[in-house]
Image (cartoon, rainbow over all chains, first blue to last red; front, side, top):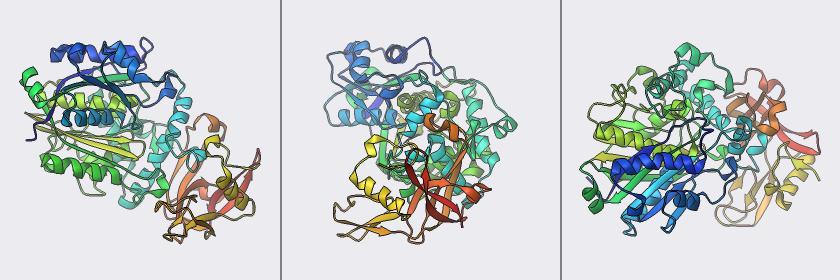
Length: 387
Length: 135
């Protein structure tokens, strides 16, 4: 196993509509738990990496020095990274590369976003600006709208059904109900999920992730430091990243994300493992169809069979390949910059055997995180392994 | 000066797009073809991915097949009074794809694979756009 960079601490803030906190307090809430469980302090850090997607949600520019200072690291190197909804894993990838390059030994990675200070219609407009302003934004194609295009093509080509799409929301709400940090901690029935109002046909309310506030923090360490700090380092053994065309109309596929295929293959190759070795996964279920396409793009099933895998029950915690057994973006919430670090939190807890009751997979050793930016313009895949 | 579509951003406004819009006003939907590598781009680009910058305007066949679509029922702020509306990705016989609004008969039970024709439509506020209708 590649033992170069490890996660030695994780922390998570409560996701939700947080009127009691802003960016800095959200980051502090996640950081407190992270430093406490790692037995470290901000003074121990060599640097920080801050993932925040959109200044436009809060009006706050230059968020990295703000967060870095608020966490007591004002004189240490910091950097802000942005990769749309894949911002969190971009922050992890940046810290991983800095440690691998030998520049730093200990880095705090902070993913944070506050999205609910603006109305849902305003947030929808701001996120639509993540599409090409000249050629796709003017048609009012929202973020759900982009994924709805994929859903229409996937349903047409493979016969993917409404029931299969809704089964994703049912599963993810099942686990979100058990996750104390989740935004919407409630179960939904298949019937409720199927009769919800259309957001962007053929996607309805229960196919779409929440707009949330939240933060998550992870501490990454070099091998030498990791072994000094903890007996249970979680190694980052594979990192893959890719990108794709800005325009949805420019894509080679409308039934999958080629960037996710490429990023997965790169990560598998680096880690020296394959799809069948993965014991638990976090995939980017911003929309139900996104989770179904992720199953196929990563290779948990063949292209076109993601819908069948979704309704088979094999992606529950006691199934063949457990996916999003923390509620996923759907139920846990999707504060853009926090999501990739939140996925890291869940997988580290899973690999240590510390996940909530009813969510813990039996003895997982290898975990995969798939984090997509916009509708495939970015994709990061990270493989984590128990030491 | 006429602008492209209802919701248009000043960041995109420049002479190249003005030329595209001028063609739309003549009822012509134009792509650009790179004089270095021969690649045709739709939507049009002023420069090529091969880094060529000598481009020629070429008219596309105004026929297409619907490859994917959606009905937006929860619109972004500026388009709330237009919802619900239909958007699709259409592919021309040349294999060029573009996003646009589905209108008229194309909004009655749209299906992937549906045959479309493309045309231009003038909009309120001195705007113009290309649109897809049922063939």
